[in-house]
Image (cartoon, rainbow over all chains, first blue to last red; front, top):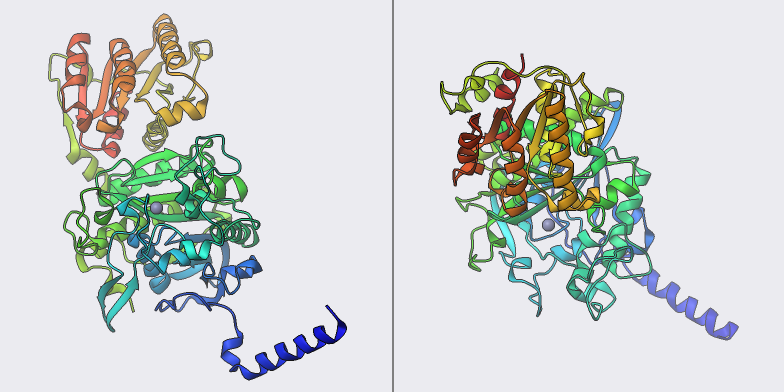
Length: 363
Length: 183
Ligand SMILES: [Zn+2]
């Protein structure tokens, strides 16, 4: 390229930038949904996942990160909803915490839409099971301020956003010795950890999350999921082996306090790419994953299935499950590590949620 | 208070007067706990024993050679997890052999043996059932979550071994009868 051409191009670029309105110059969130969330008074600031890996900036994989801080020092709790954007109780549990939490000591970091590309679509693709996208496009909740809508998405990153075709012959995690998974699993954020920068968008999101856990010195990390009603995973807490004792105590507590029967499993260290497995191994955080039962994920579910008021598993009890498990783990963690305690209040308990519904507690 | 009331309400003792152990504390302290089948249920029993202030040691892969005369009661948390076995790098055959050797040694040391099964239907199946049968045949007492006995599997094994069987509704309710078994 000649010196002239280069100069001419930069002049054109400068003109183009000057011509744009100031707001349009910020690439944050350029390709993402602007979710309507209304943080609690403990909010310290809102950042972006791309702050931890600039390669996500201006991509559909960027997502907002909400930081809540107490007046006293303490540990840091990280909450991820929407790793699978169709698992709506995970999203809504994160949103409920975001809108109600009061932090007295330590910090709470919430990412309600961990895979924001997944939040934006429900594309039905050949080979992908129906449960990965089944459900409404939005859920509607009545709140004290009126009706609000929350996005229901897909299990996977949008193929158009991934930046790479699904691998022929199936997806194999780079550190795995297991048999290949279905090819679309390359776009499953919960098979991508610890992520990498030289692969698709899903892998980049995973990479950024690992950097966040490291940079923020997260002590306790939760990834909220849902599974088919009555299946093996529903009502399960999965914990990295290093924090299995905390998980066992918490599982006992939620059963005693609320009658929620939870199963417990440690991460399978041979099965690579899952959040609890890789967050636990690759960061200082105690890593947990909780699974509530989602009626839309059952194999015999109708496409018109109600994911909010289904009597078999209403949204409130599913959100309550995640909140109760988190509160129980934090209580056990605080007892074991008082010097880095995380003191929070304000989030409604399981009983209150079941009685009044999630919307009653949102802004 | 809520927790205590809850535990007592859910406790359903079966077996009756024929088997004295159900109501009489018979097990010595300290206990030693192992996972017969490498499930994470082992972790929950550790929590319950800790909360009941029963002194115990725990080793999911406890070997017969590690038992000592100072340990008075062997608690077997029965139920197989293929994931758990895989993570521990132990085959089902090796786990069975470990369990058999452990029980043999416990009997030599005149230890009491208690089987606990808390995984319900999810911890039943050919692999689990084989381990459960070995545990039950050697036990003085068993406590289970009732969902695991829908087919009366435990009830039959307890009758064959002439031991008391306590069934509770949920895992957290195992703590009370387990603690009550220790003298
Ligand atoms: Zn999920």
